[in-house]
Length: 76
Image 1: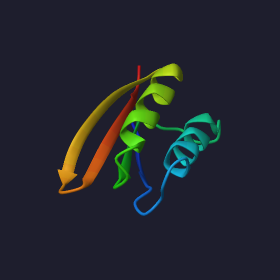
Image 2: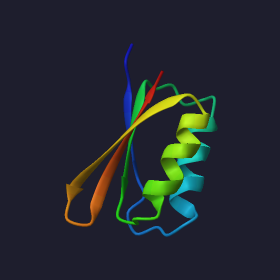
Image 3: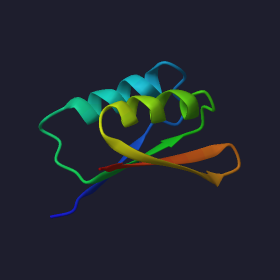
Image 4: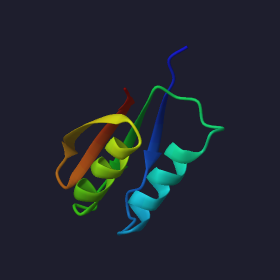
């Protein structure tokens, strides 16, 4: 079963977007194939992807609105 989750970290500043994303990825109770992380904090674009890749996720970053991005993390 493919499951997709959304983690909204808009309004959060570093290091919290990365910490919250890592906590979600590392929680063994969370069962998912992909997760969308929504952020409005540009530095998160350079912290979340490398940490997700270390954990075995593919990463795609898209600007979803002016000053807002969606980081799609998919299990490899």
